[in-house]
Length: 248
Image (cartoon, rainbow, N blue to C red; front, side):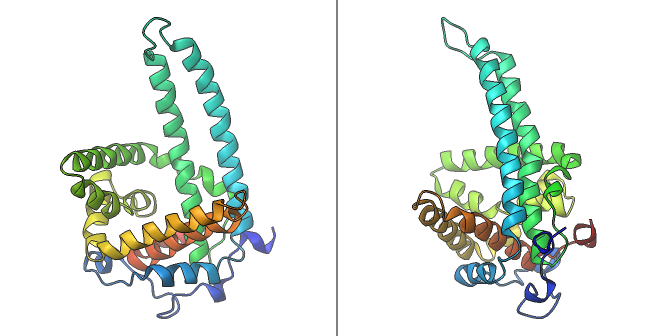
């Protein structure tokens, strides 16, 4: 295994001191730093060693998604009512199945970046390690989207608030083994302390991805893992990282 599959520990320590990361208690008390520009600078400075593993995993993810989507298209094509154009129950279940399959893999990409941020061993196989969380992940997504949709209906602003406040809910389900409601509540309470800074990081990250995509998407080679690593570093500094994550 090459060095691309193991993060350089010496370069990835927290600026406040080696190994001095956050905890759930500190996050809930607002005891963490959130400076969007500094986070992205930190991620850029420590990006070397992540890109190869990240992109191999991302390509695997994309291929699986395309295969499943192709299969879904075949199912949907046979399941549309020729008169009304309505989807059948089979098509709906096929869509849900793709979501259930891809959600744990999407979190696998984030966990690669999170492990890298603490100098732990990273590997492409991380994509497939979180299927034991598929039910709580699904329920978390359902609750998240329901609350955000309701918030958007109620004068839009509550929906925007929740969209930002729930940013860390899904990683908390996987990394801290929280239930859906606990993860949503923990994320909201922690991020509310620095909600505008989190909004700034989200907008700045979108800008980075947009700019990276302009030159034929070539910049995404750096942009996508950069943004993912920035959020992983933030999660690390907010909530800390479990020993089972580092050694798993």
